[in-house]
Each structure stands twice: as C-alpha cells, then as structure tokens.
Length: 316
Image (cartoon, rainbow, N blue to C red; front, side, top):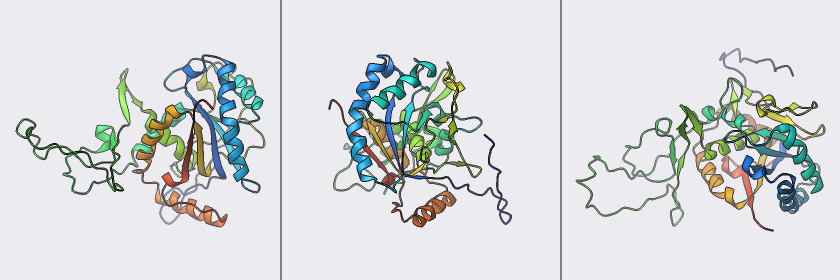
C-alpha cells in the first residue's frame, strides 16, 4: 500500500488535514484480553453468542443507507498467549457461527505505538486538565504526574501535612457536578521494566479516538486499514496495526461508536470517558469532521464523549 502524498497549505506551510472516510457507526464486537482466550474456541463462541442479540438490535436501528463497520480489539500489549495463526481463524469462525462478521481486527499495541508514531503520546499531548472551581493550582501537570482527575484539587495549600492534620475533613468535589459528585482519579501510565507502560484507560481513550477518526500525525491518519490475504503469521507484530478482514467492509472510522462489552470493562470505560473529557481535539480535525457530518446530514454532538456509547452485560 502506497502512502498518501502529504499535502501542505501554501499559506501556512502546515500539513493539511487528510479527510478519512467514515461509516455512521463503528460497532465493537469484543475487547478480550489474551488470558480470556485460553479456553479456546468455546470461550469465543460464548462471547459472540452473548453479543449477537445486541448486534442485531443495533443493526435494526441502522438500516440502509446507514453504514456500520464492525471491529474487534485483541490485546497484544499486556500479554501474548495465542498466535494470530491460531487465534484469528478461531475468532472468525466463532463470529460467523453467531451470525456476525468482523470487518476489522486491531492490535491493542497499535494504540501505544505504530511505526514511528505513538498514538498514546499524541493523546497525552492533547490533554488539557479540567481546572476545578476554587482550585489551588498545586496539582502538577498531567504530563508529569501521569494522572487525570475530574475533581477539585485536595492538596493542602502550604504542603504542611502535620500542621494541618487537625483541620476538618473535606470531601472530594466533582467539577461541574450535577447535584452530587462522582470523582475519579485516572492513572495514565506506570514504569515497568525501564519503559513507560500505558494504562488500559488511556489506551481505551486512544481506541475511541481512532474509531472516531479524530487522531492525526502531520495531517495524516495515525493508522489506516490494510487488507490481509496471506496466511496469518505466528507473531502479532508481523500483522498490520489495523487489519481489514472483509472485502466489502464499510469504513473503519465512524461518526459514532458503540462497544458491546462485558460488565468488567465498565470501570475502564468510565475512566476512558474521564480522559476524553479533557482531550482537546485538533481544531482543524474537529472542524473538518463537523463539516463532513453536516454534508451527510448526520447529527454530531460537539463533545467527543457524546459520540460514544456502550452496552455492558454478563450472563445472558
């Protein structure tokens, strides 16, 4: 696949923002960790059997000419258990057995790094911390702490813990709370083996932005679909970051996303939404996306989180 020619605005010498094709909806049919796949094909069949009724409901709402693309995220970042040669055929067979098709397969490691670009770093650089009303300004910037918060800074103004230990306890207070607070502190990375290891919450935020087509590097999409027709390799790193599995697939990116996930992912997804609430999308990308939606008469919420939806369920 040849790379698109980089276009430069002759007036500003800045790279032009490349428009990505979009479906109406990106439907995620699963987000499983490698240890979830150790039970083999039977575990996958159970997974898709649970998802199938919800996928049918969504498809009923998005009738033609509405376009839906489906995707599946495989964890090759935190662990590696099964090889693509073994897993991908089992994955496709299990989905087919439940009446589902997977258009795109994405490696979770691509949310951390793809080629010379780190989508996680791009998102980190666009986080603008939510300033709490009445905050004391003592919280260090997110790029130093690795933590994002949606609540009032509770650090003592002079840092004297012992001197102020007898002061009355002050509860956390959510920024912009509606009646009552729901406060979150989200860790974005830790250090493991001498390298930065991104958190599930940040990678999930990156994943949503990729699906919404809102990430660019020098004006270009961070990842683009690559059709795979050969035998699947033994190593995940030998697969493209974003693999197109179906010839007739609708575009990977979409104006809206929906993820059908097990309930155990609810905490991570709530944390990802907290991160996304503080991500400032490139204004040129945001403007282009809004114009793209308007041209297709698609209602598009102004905030990123408003374009994201989830279904959480277990044991049905």
